[in-house]
Image 1 (cartoon, rainbow, N blue to C red):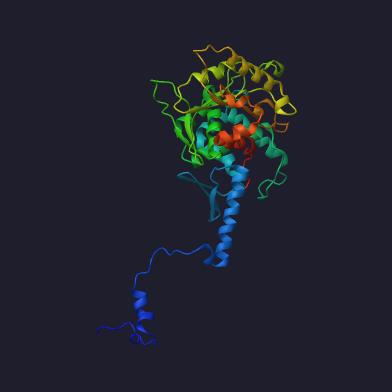
Image 2 (image 1 turned 180 degrees about the vertical axis):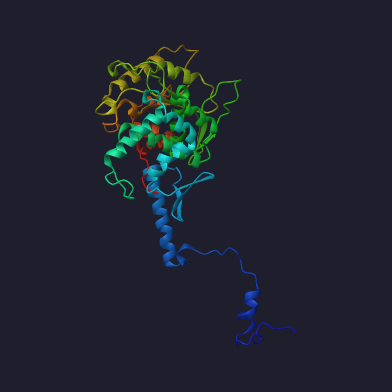
Length: 389
């Protein structure tokens, strides 16, 4: 028998059919549109709270994705890119990062390095030794699950910074096995480490990265291309690190610190000769000992500036260096021992053959090159490694 919309409900509830049985049989839309003001107050407050948390994360750490973690059956489970990691003893994000390098580079490799005499170990494993020494000094009751804090030392910060850069790349599907393999070889470590830092710096600054084909020997090319998500500006990025004998896995004996100078003109010239499909951004690691005071007063700043001027002045009319934005960085963690506080990072930024950089007003550069300004601001301010999940 056909039931009308206004007939009594056959289930005996006394309601009209259209308000009960018909309503339950009629497919409901999967998506319903409404305005923000029409949402319940607790839902609106949740959206606002989430938005403020996102903005605070970006302010402190940049655009790298926050950690994704849950607690399950006594384990801390963390998603990094397409992989899951878990352990019972990760109380802080630093705990996870300390273990993460072993998982990213291979536990067997790390165990083999630990069996070597300290002076023969890989720099990463030497940093790990320094980190363990720091923990041993400040953990008063081992094994009771308490969280302790202490001022970071050079080895501890070097280790955590590398772990966080690797995490940032894997979390954005940018960590290649070839890079991880290069990091494990002492003779390739320094260059691979700096490339890791530069790629992670662009991630934190809000860029998408397209890695170059390292297996193509037919032409020279930069490390990667970077696209600024906010403006669409594209750049070809090259990274170079100044090698020093006896440091960061390089062969030879270290020179006295007073004899190490910021001689980077050869590295910069090599970077400028690389083929680039877009505007160039060059990062140069000057690799000099830390100095007290402002970076603008540091001896290495004056030496770098004079070398840059000399490169521009020695150009011939038909043989000019290509224009480039240039970042000079110094991360001197490896120049201090386990008993000294970490020395911090320093960065200076300039350009070669870019007339706007000769103007006295820095706002000109900021307005004309907003993507580069975002990059510089991020490199200077997003140096902190998150502590919590």
